[in-house]
Image 1 (tube, rainbow over the protein chains, first blue to last red):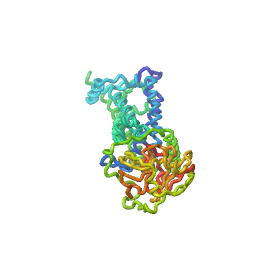
Image 2 (image 1 turned 90 degrees about the horizontal axis):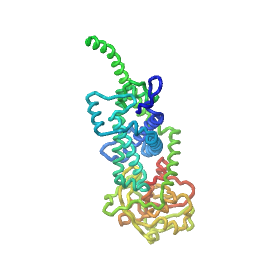
Image 3 (image 1 turned 45 degrees about the vertical axis):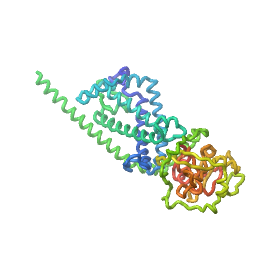
Image 4 (image 1 turned 30 degrees about the horizontal axis):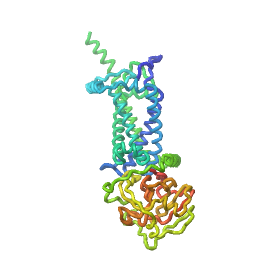
Length: 213
Length: 253
């Protein structure tokens, strides 16, 4: 995060309000989308396994579809608000950029050696790569979802995805990447618990290490 | 001097490390129990009446959104005959041997509702209407899809022939297997919506819907009724077998 958001009492704004609100709305909407999506997957599994029913939402296919097509509005509108804010406020430009492969690789090697650069309110290169990456994955998740939902009305989009059947697989792979991201993301926050509170209150003390999340 | 500093550091740093470890452990524990709670309640949430009411309301709103998205002139992609899925999967709410056997000799399609000429149609008369065919993708609500070739009369041609009120909202269908469903008028008038009598150039076998299936490539599979015995035009929402149980009514592709 940008260091220019300094304030009194030795704290700085780490996560602006829009980012915090859209983050938590996304947590809920994504949980509904993934758990209901798993139930929809079970109706006609693409691969040789089913998702355990206890992990799914909706009770049966119709219930899962109702949840999925309700939460899709939340995730789409919330995502658009976040993207517009990120572009217009400079959040993406100042907090997620610059991003070079060399800096990500260097940071990653450092992290493996246990040397993580941490300035409060500033994402390191690995974090930037992860956050830019997950934004792209969620965009692919939404676009492949639209292709599956309306393969006739949105047939140009569906064709760009490689057709209906390919779009189903893109949708599944993008979901899997989001799940992998969530696991690592939550693990990192658990490793450095003090990164949790700033995503709620927005502020952190200057000098506190922030290398989680 | 350096020794002393090291000692000091150890005593000062050690307790904080312990606290951090404890914090981590507690955080993990709390996250896990929160996860377990959502898992336990997960499948029951949908059964709650208030939740169900909200979900149904959103589903009806999604009907409206899909009607707005629906372009009456946009055609579903068509495929070469080489792309046809063989064997084409059987699908119904019962198993294949249970598919109804309709007697084609005594069969008559009954018409009702906002239709000027309600004379019932024999199969011979239906087969004498101008025939066409198309190879399109059937997409099931479950997610799977299969490509097939259906042949019959453009549904719009039939509706015009019998003098149906084309400004009405719905067309409803009653089937020999007690299945029933309904569609919106704009979809009924879509150029690719066909009242079909043939699959892969052969008269429909019982398992594919003899004597006729309404083929709608702009809607999900369950919106394509088979074994149609009667159809009616109406402005009162007729619902459907799956729709009344919670599947989205419009279910456009």
